[in-house]
Length: 479
Image (cartoon, rainbow, N blue to C red; front, side, top):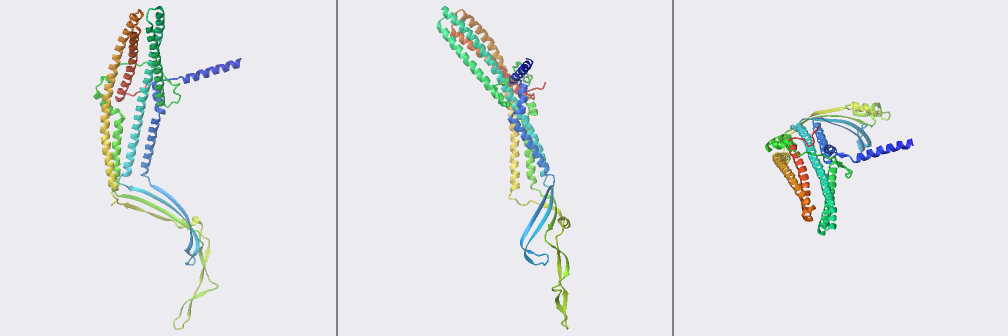
């Protein structure tokens, strides 16, 4: 019994923990933070940052000398000079060689310096792009989160409406049986209940699609078990809405990364023009070469008199005609010196400077400079366009936020009126003064007014977040 009880307790604990884990309700802060870590677009932007860092390493490498080593071993087969006789004969010889090369740019038209500056700017641009991507994803997540909240509230409204209509259907059936109202009213109520059920289904489907959209932003697979925490957002006027649009725009010009990206791209374009112009200037390089070699053929280690032909006639004495003899010596061959000794004896060094002055290159440098000048002008235009776009977006966000607030306030007033109208219609219908069709019309208008309040409420909340976003207030504020 004791073992079974312990097993049961563990099972209940694990089962309860599993259910709790599966039914975790996400807050908007958790959704945004999770998306910033797992969203595919943000991961791609992070990779762009890594590429920019690699490009900087490449630009820095331009200041370093280039060093390379080489080695070779060759066989010469055929007609070669015999080192002992000096005669050409068919033979096979082998040689080995080693070398070390080094070169460094002394002057290159400031191209290496400008490439490094451009690489630093590219890193900055990649960081700005990453921040913009995070801001965009935060907005998308906030919008998707608020859409789920609206859909959840809308399901409650539709279910409440369905419950009221089902109660009304039961009451109508009793009145029809009592002969107090015509049977046509019962058919109208049944049709209304069927329509309400369809609205509930539509609302639930919309809720499922909203969860799927947010789950995809978060890169979650099991979106069916994904849900968000209920949040009661208070609709109040934001302090940012009390500011003038021009004030918000001036603050946005300092805070928003769109302009920072455009300004950085302009600076990159300027550096590219300087790099291209650097190709007009002469380049000066320093170089150094070390080499050594070794052979494997027999070598001459000494000489001895030829026993078969010890002397040879080299001339005659004038008058006596006496022969002038010279001793004949034959070379004494020995093995080649050790390889390391040969490498040490045959060392050689070569160093100097090389000046290269461009004179004519088929207009390639000129065309390259002109091409980057065009890109520079395009970057200037892009900066101006970014400023215009930001100004338009700020004024649009300000107008949308104020319009959303007025729409919400109007919807609340309309809901109060529809509430009273519905209550009055219910009283009239209960005493038989109003028919079912008119009552259903009043009830539908009341239901639509409830949905409109929800829609305008969450639309206003999102519009305010967008406006505050341009003013430099983050979507999720740290507590």
